[in-house]
Image (cartoon, rainbow, N blue to C red; front, side):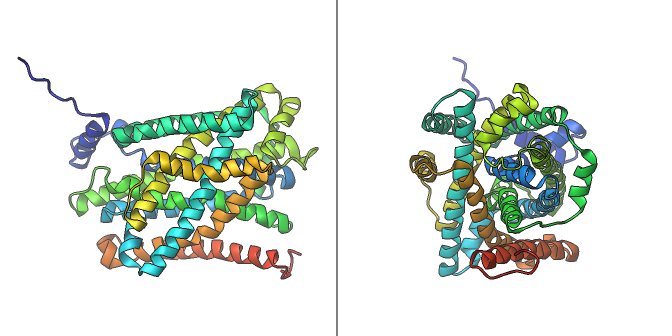
Length: 434
């Protein structure tokens, strides 16, 4: 009787082929594609429905003038995602695990609580976004859209049990759908490309509302859970056996971060550009996703509105799955225990159901969830800078001087923006932003 031989899984085959590349036995573009995955999954956090909410408000209210904020946030994101990926590759541990090992219990518990609040704010945006897209496209109640989003997201998460590669391919396909949708939007919308260029390179902050939206853009772009998650995605993916392999893996990872987050940045810029081109001149009051959809049909045609909803649904489903993965990894890293994915999914969905049942404005909820994320963001950023510059943890892979300076400056920028917003919230006047 012939004994059946188990065929290697897709993830196992990918791991074996990566080993061949590291050993110099494989070369070429197809070999490079083997390393695509972690940054692509992390990049979906930069195209989630929270971005739709903040970018629509930025474009409709202020035209192209806040594009520089999107660009700055994306450059900061590239740096910190690359550092997070390097941490996982070099140490074999993720950021939450190292926080657990290096910090005292009170600090660790405080960081975990902040991270859990951020996870709930993240899931609020992602879950609501997918539900809004479904309810508008298929004319179903919002609660029904939320139920469908929950089921589809859970279905996507089941692929995580089959290894790293299937999830990377699924998320990669959804990233491609979102990107294609905005390529189409750029051909439909009457874009003033000269003003786009000026908006990208000319910093301005018209008023306090613009500052709130800017902090929301940063919170929606540089995501706390993505900073944690990236180190977890690289820690067990073809683990390096020596410093030579670590160096190669870090180099491939850096290139993937640049490419994946450049795509995410381009999508974010396209969102602001589309909102500005469609709404700013005649309808600057457009601030809600639902309103934007209904206004796109008479302004740019039904195709533009349909493409917008398809991108929103793809964004909501993919980012919700990735957010659940990140939340699970953060909890396990900080407190050391694992809970079933369906329980995690249920807990993080609750705020979204509460918002809908209370009749709150969903786009306002999306925007303020991103502001919450921006306040939570310095926690993993500071920890990441501390660890990646520490030679006792990173060895020869500790940050160089320029990288260290750039990481510290990026953290300070976000801290300063948050302090300014807090001062304004409590009525303390700020010159030039009154």
